[in-house]
Length: 610
Ligand code: GCB
Image (cartoon, rainbow, N blue to C red; front, side, top):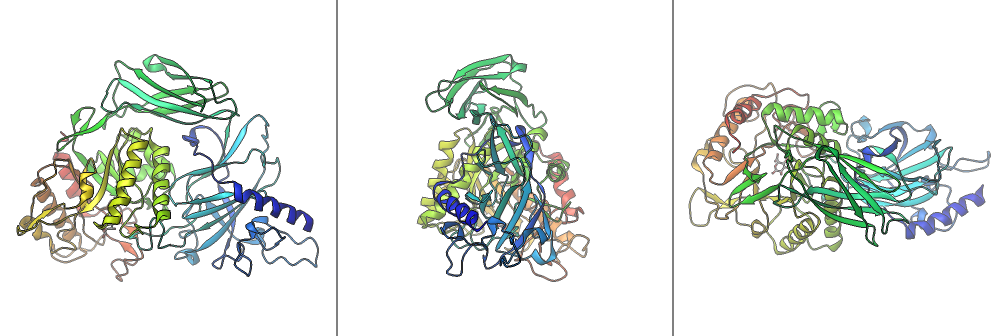
């Protein structure tokens, strides 16, 4: 047995230096999948004792046998064996799920935690390839399977996968994942945020089965600005990927197009289409699209729409549209923690619809895929964003690459969602030369990955030089974005709500304007008068004042107040009012509606969208 440890460790040493995650498989949930969600044993490991030896060298990079390396799930072979851990005697956590909301001891925990799951795979069929797919793990995941390291993933909100075909057994597969949510200065996000640092395997873990040559990725959307041409590509992975036949069927449109891949396994296409029902709020039409490769089929539900700007207008399917929005964090009153299921998404998006929204800002990081799928079905336009928030290390190359990777994974996952109309690069970042370089590179990358959607960022507003009580946007990134968005808190961090009526706006850029945030804190059920902070009347008054101010800002094409539901934040410590919650929600964390909910609802009911 000891000999086996050293063999396994040597193997893992070799593999950890050569392996990493594979290209992301798109539309994973609509493929043949086996869930490995459920109860997973865990060990809390703040000192990373199961990862490093006493010289602080990672076990998985040492060729010697180390029975205390947790990824081996070692068991004493006889009564003389010294093994100082035992996963199977430890408590369990639900996967998917953040760990913070599952145990009072873990509420504030930031550090390493090991998950272990054993499972059988009865349907072992050597012609299939099998991939281990993680919806997300916050923040850094080290993944080990049957004693081998598969790789590491950094970034808490995007999916990743590893192929396990050759490692999979029929009985007793061992999956061990170390997840570390320590905040890092060089991380994305960095040390300070105004949200809870929920750690763990926060989204579902699945085995995805594919053919030996399979459809890894595809893009199927309308060509930029063209209501009658579907454009895209299909990418195969596998030995037979070159010169391979693929058929793209949209039977309802009588489309059946044959494609042949090039030597890299890719087929590009443009297909003219007549009589398309275009996706839009109120009529979110989705077509069933089937891709058939030689050995497999992938089915998706895809909507077709164009999104462009013209001067200060946003055009959806060539028609101006006003975005009636709300900002949302990925947190659920149903579970008092990270939202993660289709039901959580249903609840959040139903509230947005009840408010009268046609648009949601999914802040401040990529939300789970159910949110986008449901937004597609419900006809809600979406702003998606990466956690480049406040004070990133702009000059650090690794930080940039991390942000770019999160952007790439988000776009790769969601580029076929008609609902997503805006990719946002950042939130409230300082106007500095190094930041400009960082964000410009991100925007160029986003455009290179997807030229059909709009780019934005939540910027900050400033005093207009030389004109009293006048605000403007003075940020060079405003020249790069397609949609000029900014957050503003006049009446909350900046004076009282009455101040809104005294402020004028002079925004010189000829672009559509979105107000990406405004809001005020209120404790549900606390009533007094409109000048008393934290009351429902104050919040309602702020909404009334802000809404009439917004009506006076020329070029505004929509907004997304902060925020739908109260959310946990360690920055919010005021006793009896905040108690760890940011109170700017239109609903409390228990789902109680505040007065301002109805104020916004009324406004949206009267507001026309064109
Ligand atoms: C902001 C941030 C958001 C905060 C909000 C607040 O400007 O973008 O993340 O939660 O203000 O409540 O202060």
